[in-house]
Length: 101
Image (cartoon, rainbow, N blue to C red):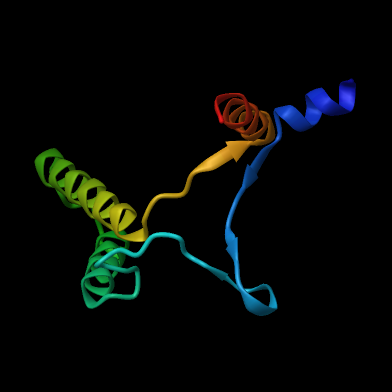
């Protein structure tokens, strides 16, 4: 019983498997992390990181923080979404599917 409860609340990451153990993404987005836009955004983040911010006033620092957050948000949307399903959630979904069909 204890083992069942432990497995029910353990999160797992489900990926589609292909030949020879390789995995492929299940969603295809128009922009990928290897796109030129992502390289430009990553370069800008690196520029901001290495800037000497000691001579900037608070308004300039705030603008850099906002720019950094927006760039990171854009990069996160380029990577696509990952859904984590716990074992308990997976079991519940399977039980519901069996009951309904």
